[in-house]
Length: 134
Image 1 (cartoon, rainbow, N blue to C red):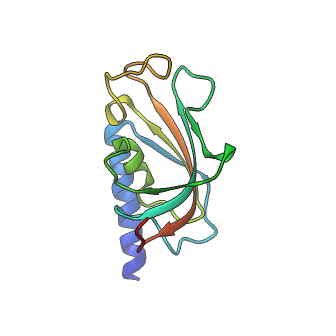
Image 2: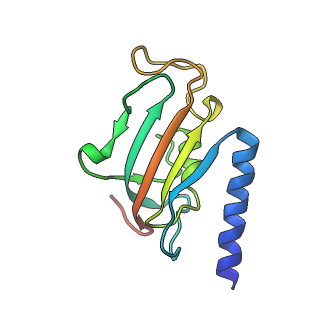
């Protein structure tokens, strides 16, 4: 019972963060059951498709190659991506729409994305690895 309460509390906190920052988290495909969900510091194995406002082609699409391992709440990723992954279930596919203030803000890369760009990231969570060093 405490497990379910904690799970729903995490989901509620994520929704509050999303409302406060214009971050949007949607579920494209729900997990059949949610026995494992993502917490900060977990490694995940996932397919990622990242798109940026103003570009037709994805910036990253692991479906063209193979899934990737990544650690959640890693400083290498934009804050909105880390926040958007928290609470996702194993086997869930999420769409995270990340506003500029939780992405790159005023920064830009010529030919890739401009300042104040909104990002959309689809993440298909294939596996959650709680205790691993990669």
